[in-house]
Figure 1: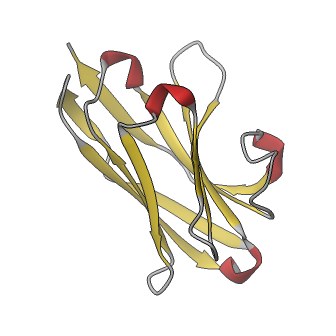
Figure 2: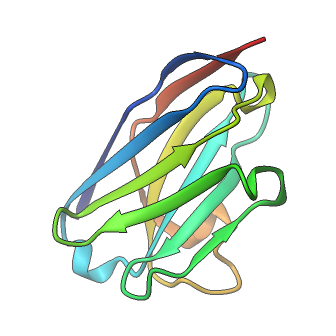
Length: 125
């Protein structure tokens, strides 16, 4: 079992920055991929970014490339999402997730076995 706890959400003006954290505990050694997803009101949950836990390789959805950076600290079992140049359309609940494999299906929700409770990010215009 893996437990994930997000933190760092909040209210920020457009153009500002936030850093989300996702602390993992439990059987993290079996989670080779960690991902960030977000869900805006009335919309489907969508992929944002992912990182290979061992390799550190990253992958981003097009809308956040150049603005968001995901990283991990394996010693702390923590993943981060640095979000810069935030836009009102980035407003959503952000979730972290742990999956089995960092591969071509990393954008798919069903590739992830464990999910955090989510943290709200609100970007005002």
